[in-house]
Length: 521
Image (tube, rainbow, N blue to C red):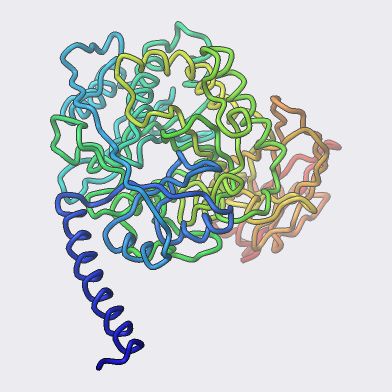
């Protein structure tokens, strides 16, 4: 007679084998026609949720009761090993068409071809102030498009560079249409609407309405029905960037085409402020996402965030944009995100980027899009105008007057890459600060440091141009007539004089005297 303990043991093995077979079969069925699934489970703790964010993509709908998440097949396998009870959530993408909508009302989602035509038409209709950039063509053939709007478009100038980009999650499309409408509004309002004229004349404005076209048009270029959060490779693009805490590839995936395109854009333009737009909640999210410590400019961030939220409240019906702390949250306080673009831009590209959640419904009925525009228009415009405030100026070589790429750092204040750099092509820098007194140091290899004392006031601009002196420059006073004749025969191009000086320049001093500057190689 079989031993009872042995019998129980064999029964458990049989059940385990059966369970694995059923599990494998059900998992295959689950992902039969899907690249990702959407599910929820009970919220346990912030730490537990943050740990799980390294395995699955936590969704914006997450609250203190339930955690909502997306997962690919491999991610879901890893999640199942945690032994957490879950429930699948059917995320229906409605069959919206543009049949009843018009561009005049902006109450429809365009097809992919309509989208590209709109972007081309913007540039064609306003060639003096608008330039269309194809940032990159994906393997699918779809393009990452961005318009640049400026009174001297395409020319490097002393303006802050600002970027709006939307829908890096392909099934979050409110911002997609709102950004198209913002482009149209700014271009049409130039020289007639004062604040749009101010923006075009003083800001280098870039707007990318659709950062994940493969996700948005996963079912085909004719419809957003079937839109997916992830890109064509099943990768969450907002987990695919280098992370300050978790390294170059925190999600374990290679950098995607879309990721590389935006990393290259940030390298070439050197944005000062930016915002990436999502849906699934109604809140302004500011850094950091990856760790709990605050930024050096946390007070500035909170001021900016509440300005956005309060303005949205004033232009919407009660109950809108009040998630979390009345429409504002620090990213990590909500839930941890590793590999997000917000932290990448702030930490690695020295740009002040936020994350904006425009609607609880990820793809709201298109008839409601005008409501979201009216609720957010004033906030979106004000946020661009904030790029004109703070401390700014030009950093140049005191000898040649040429622009320098210098480090601009606040002593005893800056940390975690909160310093900024002036641009090599123009020399302009833009440092956003809350009210206070700051000791700002400008530094560059081969030049003497210079520190200035600055008082900053909220919502105002303070301009300080700075000249850095090369360490190999020598000043000599009391130029005699013979030397002056020699110097005057040579320009500042650097040609050698008969005295074998490498470069000779004259500088008028504040006391009226003239100094001869000899720059020695």
